Image (cartoon, rainbow, N blue to C red; front, side, top):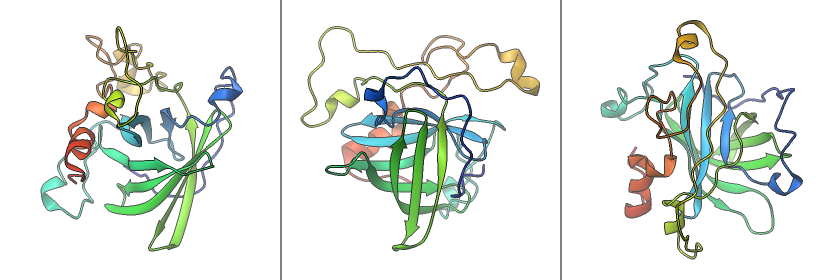
Length: 213
């Protein structure tokens, strides 16, 4: 799976129906610049996280991970944006990005641009910087039960809000037989990732304070 950092193209038809108030919301599903994957971004325990939620070519593996024991793990559901914190005074989050093409972690920032673009920039030791633009394919994601565990987060009452269903990627080849993408958690849904805050890699970081790569 190619998730290299370079300038992407702008999707012509974005989520123009979104209100200006949502312009700075980086949550939702985003198509990477070369179109090979979608990244689902959500606020988990006070930080922004992103994980692979769809692959153009199913069955990808983390084959370039420097940890040999991790090279057979599926890339679907793998954390890409890691523990990104909001920067004071600006609509920008900073943390780390995992580049599956070379198996390396980079210092990174994400910055929403309008309602349907997300700029990703990453650097190694303050230099060798690059970036790309992702395009929105699903609307912002409401808070989940995992999000509400964040320190200082408002307590929820009643039923927990459901996560917004991602837009179905274009059907190609064998994918045409899978039908429409259903809501996360729904029986028979094509979306098998669901709430990324509940993925072991992300949930484990919240409890242990470190990422188990």
